[in-house]
Image (cartoon, rainbow, N blue to C red):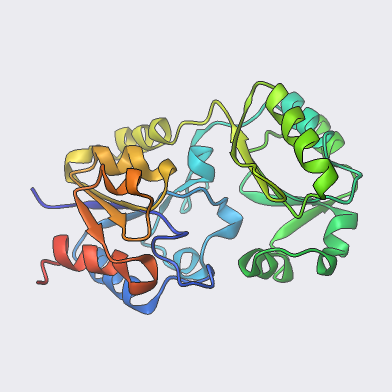
Length: 278
């Protein structure tokens, strides 16, 4: 049976080393696949505000699975097909753990990036990844005087949070406080950079909800990824592809190991299994 949809991860899978743009060869392969009638569905830990410009600019890429399944969006209509976030009360509780301490934090919610105004205005003092700096320099974020008050009073739930450059003396106490909430999944938390999602988030459930809407199932899907968060899709898909840079446990569940992301591994797999180029 022909592949009719591609679940596409970004970081470590299809982006260039700068983590800003999809490589030319990868983009060409995606374009040819879409011209063949194959649907491209981004499935990523990124919030909508941090999507690559090429994806945003292509109206054929209509459905976005964002924030590790925190939000599934129909970009054409603006409809939210699926959403799993912290409650406004939980969101406020989390923000109170780091706000007012000049800790660099990006909070994803409603498809946007929210930041403390004082931190944002002093972002030159922080060491953040270039693609995050690009997002801020292009003013794709919202500055707030008080994070917890906003989420609570505006009844907004958080999708995910990234903290960068947490001072050494604050790292373990902050991680401990985050763990003690009982409702967070910390995916990066060994030191100065901490990333966490709601523990209730389930990317598989988000994908299943979208597939049900589209009348699609995994028997006609190729899934490409490089991380533990991509594993369930790689295992379920008709053709599960792990990048050569993926950890061994991810490669173990894949049907095909593509070259690393910086060698256009995504294009290699699409050319081989979708475009039928040898």
